[in-house]
Image (cartoon, rainbow, N blue to C red; front, side, top):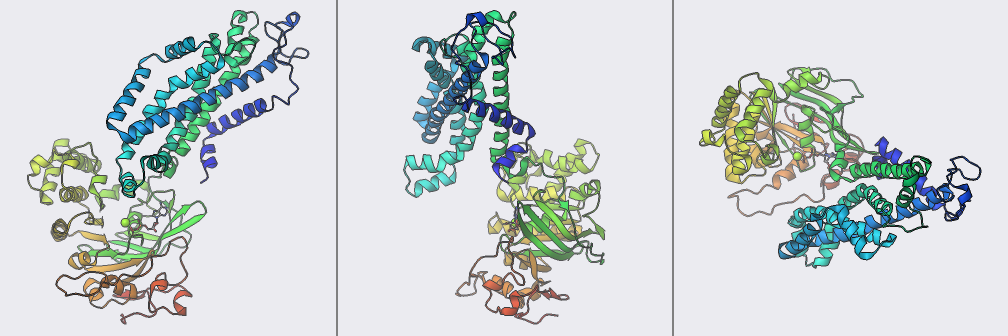
Length: 621
Ligand code: ADP
Ligand code: MG
């Protein structure tokens, strides 16, 4: 979505932009507008009311035309305020970046200096600067800019410190870039949005400060008009001729309000976290917009996907992440889903419980049946009950899924309490039982640990305990062992297998590793570009893969003790799912491709073994 549209989605920001636009247009047109000379006095005409002959807004105590003074004054105030903001932002950010990037002593010296500036009351400091430099608009500008520098320096330093220790900066150093290059090309672009945000929200404030100094007679000098000095001069006649105060007062109000409203809009639109969709709050479940008929229940499996289609609608582009997946898993069975990164495994898994973020995710077709019931049009209350209670998830990175500030025991108890109204002590008791179930040593003391105090393998056990908390019937494990080393991986797999047998769990195990599938899964489905290209009993698929893609995927797996053999990487990359070819998506990388492969969609043929290929390596039945 374009930046302007993001900003203007916020109505108040749009209003601010319109008001500010009108004011800017007026002050830019000042030289060509038929205005009177703002400094011409005519004491006979003093304090004329607004709408009097020849003076639309009346006159002030010296008979000067208020409209002319207002527009000239606004022009000056805006220019000074914006200039002060630009100067403060430039100098402040430069100081902040340098301090944050170099750290150590440089940081200390610079930031203590900034702290000293900040220790003075703000307006007193500005007054002191003007007093030292002498009154005048330029000096007011310098004073306002100077007192705002610490604000930018602190803000930007904070951001830079966290960025400067990140890997991409190390990479830039390794690439031999100098400090200046790193600061300008690596750091600056990352903090630029923060600088703009800080500026857009402080410009109004700086205009007020400049006006304040002028009001006290320290800024613009007579007869030059700016909004502050107009207010200052009108003060004596506030009761007898209130319009002389109201005119500049209203203008200041309009300018500052419109800048702040627009600034808020810009901040929301620029903030990368808000931009990725947080502003358009994700729905509690994935949006379902099925165009075709809903497939009828076929009684297969405890959990069954029927021709499931999930897309991402991003602007004009449509990403077909899942393009018609049919799968089922029985009680006590382990189904493997295997495929390269980006093949749509996670999106398939998340679609089951409506967990794909929406927008941009939309389920556009098919059905998800749990025990025969279609979850896609179940009421949200029912779906929520099933989440965790009937179908639970285990994700790849337990550190990201566990709350960093709560103890393990409390988090487990919370998961239990969501679905069961039992006393907290009983929930803790159950949490302890869960930790024992997942074979965590010393479970009593582990209950009081924080996630960061555990090793990766331990954390993943907690992740599994969390999934087991409400005794689900189906567990969907999305690459749960990818982040672990092989010995821990073997333990986790053994644990999952044991739990499956003990509890009669159905497991959907997502992985990109055929070795893992061979160890754990009864059946396996191979995904490519959002579709299943082959499915069957694990043993049969491993021994005689039918789809050329599966063949080559298996050929990529190194074999221990299998002697030396060249590992064959698959040339090329998976296609982008927003421009899938008709027919077989693997064809461009396939050795057996023919004309027919890319002409029309290829069905998934077969019964126990199914394959989506017109030149299979093995005949399937
Ligand atoms: P994986 O098989 O590695 O788990 P995913 O299911 O995460 O793959 O992703 C499937 C496809 O969906 C990828 O091509 C990815 O680019 C696309 N995708 C995922 N999330 C989004 C999103 N928010 N917007 C657009 N495309 C997305
Ligand atoms: Mg994934």
